[in-house]
Image (cartoon, rainbow, N blue to C red; front, side):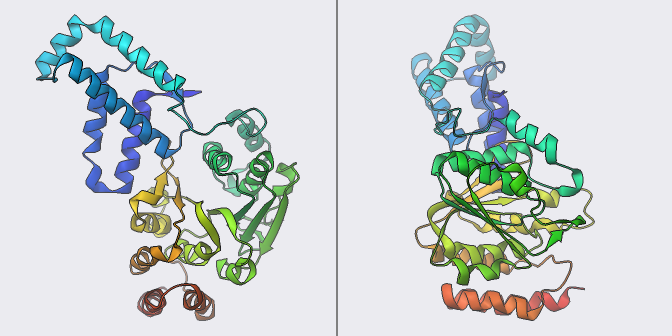
Length: 377
C-alpha cells in the first residue's frame, strides 16, 4: 500500500521541523514544489521509505522543477501560474505521470532491495501483532517494526543489541528479520525479570514464540546498560535498538554505554521520540529520546518518515568519541526522573566514562548528578 506524494512531502517536512525548528520554512517550500509540479495525489509511492530516500526524492523533484523552469521560463505571479495551469493542464498532468514513472523505474524511491525471502510484508507483521499483542504489553507498532526491518535488509547485521525487552514482541520480530537476512544473534537486556505491566509474565516471554528462525536470542534481565561494556567490548554489535526508560537522562546514559560497543556506520534506533507530546502525561518526563535527538549532529540522525515520527536512528561515526559533546549537552539539560538514580548505579556510568570517554564526559556526569539527582522527589 502506498502513500500519496503530498503525504510524503508532508512527512519530510514534519521530519525536518522535528529535527530543527530553524527549518520550519521548508513547509511552504515543499508544498509549493508539489503545487508547481502539479503532481497527482492519486499516484502512489511506497509507504516505507528510509528518511534519506525521501530526501533523495525531494532533491529529484527540485531538479525536475529546475528543468521545467528552464524550458518554460521562470514562474511568475500567482495569476500567471493560474493562467498557465488553465492553458496547459493536460500537458502538466502528463509531465506529472512521467515524473512518477521515471522515479519508480530508476529505483529512486527506495534503495533497499528486497525479495519475498528476506523480508516480512507489513501485512505479515500485522498478523503477528494480532496474534500476540495486548495493550498492556506495550510495543513498537507494525510500521515501526517494518522501519527497523528496512535497516536490517540494508545493513545485514549479524549481531543485534536491544535495550528494553518488555514482552519480547520487538525482540521476536527483530530476530525474525535477522534470520531472513543471515543474522545470527539478538542480545536483549531489561532491568526487570517480569513484565513491568504484568508481573505474572516473564520479561521477553513472547520472543521465542514469535521467532521461528535459527537465531540465538540471549536474554539478560535485572541489569541496566552499564553491564554491557565489560561483557561485550570484544564482540561488538552491528545494530541496536534502545527502548527502555525514556526519562531523561536514561537514553543518554544508554548511548554512553552502547556507543563503544558498536561497529562504525551502524544504526542505533531509539523509540518514543514523540512521547513527550502525550497529553495523558501530567508532565513531560518521557522527553529523554527527544533531548538526545536534539543534540545529535543533523548529518547522522534520521526520523522515520511516517505517522507521529516516533522512531529514529543514529548512524555511529568512525570515532564514537566525536559524540562526547552531544552527550554532554544532553546531560546538562534538566533531568526528568520519577525516582532518583541510586549513587552506586550511577557510579557504574562514571566508570564507563573513565574507561571509554574523555574527561569532559566524566566531569559532566559528576556535575549533573550532583545538580539534578538530589532535587528529584
